[in-house]
Amino acid sequence: MVLGYTYDRVKADRAEVAQFDDKTAWWERYLWDAGYTNFYRPVADVGVVLAAGTSLVGLLVMQNRDLRAAHIVAVDEVGVLDPSDGFPEHVAWSTYPAVKRAQGFTLGSEFLAVSLRLPG
Image (tube, rainbow, N blue to C red):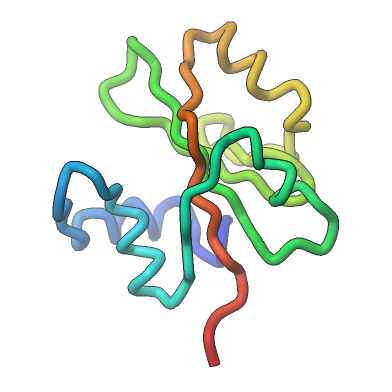
């Protein structure tokens, strides 16, 4: 579960969210509509999310030549949660990128930083 949403819920909701242009991912709009402020940061800034007590979660997109869809993982102050692994315990960020590159993934140059603080 990430941001209070189960993988199955997000997958079901995905069908309801239209892709509105080629520069904006559907999950950006999905999170905005749910009240979560989000913005892009360079992957080199992922330490902001990993800092203790942060109010941010990062969503990192990766590509793999063998997959037709983008692969998305969540990064929080504990590490990485990967839905393709069935959301096991967190994986340390310090090792995660190298493992994924060895599996043929290319990490995006930016990640979507999502504020956990809802307005109001």
